[in-house]
Each structure stands twice: as C-alpha cells, then as structure tokens.
Length: 180
Image 1 (cartoon, rainbow, N blue to C red):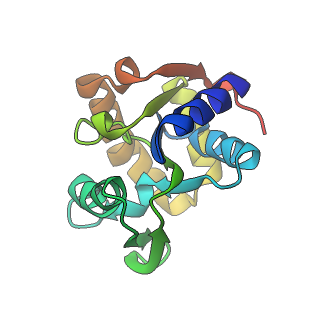
Image 2 (image 1 turned 135 degrees about the vertical axis):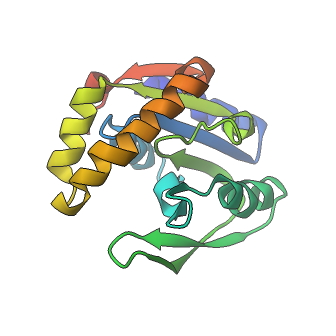
Image 3 (image 1 turned 90 degrees about the vertical axis):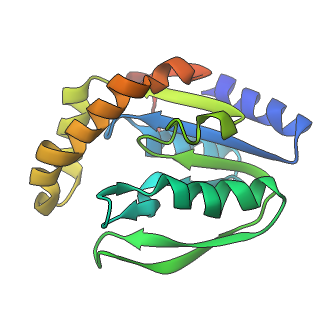
C-alpha cells in the first residue's frame, strides 16, 4: 500500500486539491482501502458514491454527484450536499467538504464515464464477482439480498462490461492485497 500512499502524496505536491477514485465490484475492499489510506493520511476526506443513491432512478445520481461535489471543489469552493440514508430511505443528512487536500471518491462505479476524467488518480480493486457478492451478502442486511442478486449486481456487471473502468485505472490492485 505504500506505493499508493506515495503516489497520492506526490500528486498533492503539484495541486492544492486532488481527487482519487477507488472503484471495484461490491465487496472487493474499496472501503477498507479508503480506511487504510485515511489511517496513513488522516486529513483525507472520503465521499461515498452510495451517498448519492437516488430512489427515483434506482442508481447513483451521477449528475448530482458531479454538480455538488466535483464542480464546486474543483472551483475551490466549499460544498455541502445531502447524503442518502439507507435505513430511512431518504436524503436528510448534510455533509460539507472544504476544497483542499486529498478527496477520495469511493464506491462501485466511481469511475463512471461522467466522472472518470475528473480524477487525478484512479484505483481499481480487482475481485472475482462471486467473492465480492458473497462478502456483500454476509455483511449487508438480509432485506437487501434480493436487490443485490436481481438488480444491483446485474447493473454493476453491465457498467463494468460497457464502460470497462479497470482499463481507465492508473493502478489495479488485487483484493487479496488489501489488509487493515
């Protein structure tokens, strides 16, 4: 992991604010990797793609994400946005971010074609689909199991098949190499 930390810190020497994408299938270790980076660089700010889930479109609202996160921060402005609360099925909590330092955008499809060129560093966490799905089903509330199997995993596999985000990554790391 030190090579990732070194790369991020080197990028920060060149710019006041840098954006790092951590993408991969659900259960691959993206959140764990984000936590490892934050542990080594405590000033890191993490934004989760899942916080921009929209019930009306049944997926991440990438336009809102771009308009409320990237555009203001890249302009050097403070941004505040509502994050989705999965337990309450609504967006009611406000999260604010200052535009300086390292901002990690973590989540499946964070390297969506609408966002991929906005990053300074892109990380793909490679993991077999079945292993990721098994991890997700073990970790998540059982009320989401049907959605994972019937909706979300097919959506994600379609995204990977069509957009091939791993080909846009600056680095691909194996899920086996992520340890807290």
